[in-house]
Length: 338
Image (cartoon, rainbow, N blue to C red):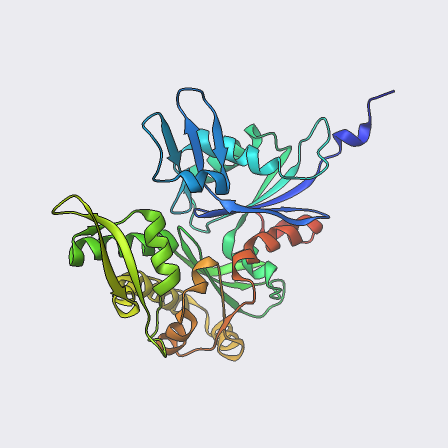
């Protein structure tokens, strides 16, 4: 017979459903997808593009087309688009059977509301998941970097993502105290857009602002400050123009967002029980997430908080690697799931 029962066996998929990027882990294969969380749609034909292909279109589409980022500040802003995007990423799993219904672990912000949790779960179920488990992003990141989350010792992690920054103190398989601020890479990009408007009457798009952040962004003075040429639209003459900006200026533009992250870390430390605080003093704080790649952020935090800060080797993949470890042993990690 042509029918194989093995085609019905559920795969196991871990998803870091990020505001900026979505990463997919498949048990037995590792990370199989790492693409921008963006969808492009042709309203006339209904044709859709996802991920990197859609990002290339962002800000350049004609009237009948639109690019949509369905995740904003770590929450679902467009449920329908999130569903089709999740379905696209779940199709990245290799060797899908005829009746492909995977068990899915999705990392979500620790400050997500019950309504937002339900929306994420519903979106995954409509995208043909068989069972959906949710885990807080800082917990997934802690598991991903190998912190001893089950131990009666305190571990602190800062996960700076695209839409949110998550700070959590973890012990005995639980989050003892946490802070979640809707400040991350996207807010930093917006800071740059507003700074250029205010100081240069220059309007740039999201992609240009992100590139400026990557090239010039820093949280601490650089040994050798940088400069770059920026192209945008003059707000007075409404014609394209070019200007030169420095890394000092971009550091000034990012100061509010960086200060907000520092304040959130301080709030978490203030709420930390003394016994766990002493553990953190001994072992330091783990820094992860794409935003952790901002130059000098670890140095700035170290100076402001006066505690050791350890930047992990692969900050972008900590969360999705954590979902993968959870998939490997759901029973062991059942207590950390929502």
